Image (tube, rainbow, N blue to C red; front, side, top):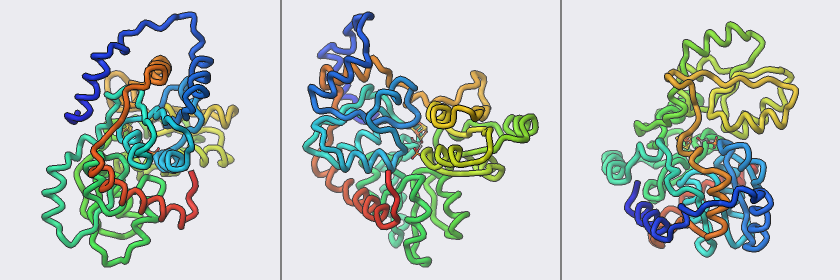
Length: 337
Ligand code: 13P
Ligand code: SF4
């Protein structure tokens, strides 16, 4: 955890609101709606959030959709039910707005796998390379990047650059390898990964496919190559969700965080969704960071206006440039949230 986040966390602990007991008779859905109106707040949620949070959110989306929504909102307060890099991106785009993250400890293993000082040294070893960074990284990494991408626009962004352009891709080695494979490029990859998407078991998925030959395997490109090789469809969370809605198929094995299955089931109530099995003892492929947010913490952060995501202005301005470039390119590609 960065010193900045640690300090902010100590600050809210000092104020004591984390210890506040919530009256169990309160209808939190009603209370949150009330707070939204009182504070002119918007609640943005990622698909990996728990179902209750998804149900009360004003907007649910993938990382690109969430960044686009954060860029266009007129609200005074953005409550970001996601992880730190997502709320940080919202703050970078909205310096005048208050951006709240229900649990400031909601980090990201992928973002943590790329510390800015090490990445700076890596970049210096490749002086003639352009840097494309996946949005799952800290503001410090964004500030060292030329263009930000997400899993829904990475391929188009790479393809928009001349073939001879040398590129560093950070921090996800799996998404980077997948983009190299699908574009025929040879980007230099930072060796980072997401703990949730690297945990799937090829052996167990292969057996599951044999037991459910009718089911299509849908996978997020943060998964390792052997999983992607046997997938029927690969895409961002929004792309996977849309694919399952449009597909004539009725059953799917889902190789990404399980939170997305709430929307899949809601949007296609008559279809069957099976979580792809992970290679761990607890058989769990929930993101421990995403799942730190709860409905109670959403309520508390809205009531007390904390914890708030902030950053030095110099860092914000440097991190904003590559995000703006991504938003501009996404508009050109016709990619909406
Ligand atoms: P997308 O929602 O952009 O597909 O990203 C998934 C993810 O891992 C977010 O942390
Ligand atoms: Fe980070 Fe992976 Fe969790 Fe997404 S699912 S927030 S990439 S650890």
